[in-house]
Amino acid sequence: MQKNLLTQMIGEKATCAMEVLFSQQAENAVKANAFIIAEIFDSAHIIEQLIEQPLEARDKAEKKLIKSFYNNLTLLVQKTWVEKSDEALKEQVLFHLDGICAALKEKKYTSVYKEFMLLLHDTVYLLFGRQAKQDDFGEYALRIDPEFGVFWQFLKKTSSAVPKSESIGRIYILLGMCFLANY
Image (cartoon, rainbow, N blue to C red; front, top):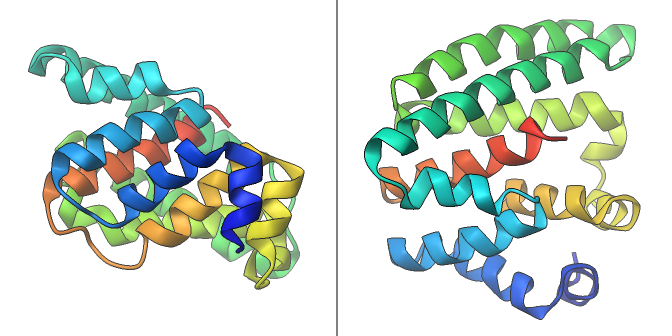
C-alpha cells in the first residue's frame, strides 16, 4: 500500500497517527493516536469513554461495546452470502465470536488477542471473498470505502504480534470492535 494513497484518503495527521499507533511506542502515544484513528471510524467519543473515563464508566462503556460488537458481527456474518466452500468458516467465526466476547468481558485481552485478530481477518474474508487475499486489497478497500480501507490497514498492522503491553493490546482490540460494532 502506498502511503501516498492513504494520506490522500485520510490526511497527513491520520496517516502519521497510524504509524505511531503501529510502532507500539509508549502507551500515552498509542492512546493519543488511537483517538485520531477512532475519529476516522466515527468512534472517538466511544474510545474516549473506554480510555479516559473513571473505571466504573469505562467498564460500563466496554460492556456496551462488546455487546454491540457481538450483535453486529453476528448479524453481519449470518447475513453475508458466502460460497458453499466457506460455510464452515462462517460457522467457525460465529463459534469463536462467543468465546472471544466471553474472554473480553473478563478482560483477558492478551490471551485472546491473536484469536480476536484472526476473527477479524476471517470476517473480512467472508465479506469480500478471495479479493481479501489479494495483494492489492488494501488499495481496493481504500478506494471503495476509505473508512474500511483504514480499518484494513489497521488490522494488517496490528495483527502480526501480541503487543508489548496488555493496555496497548486492549486499545487495538477496542479500535477493532469500534469499527465493526458500527459497520
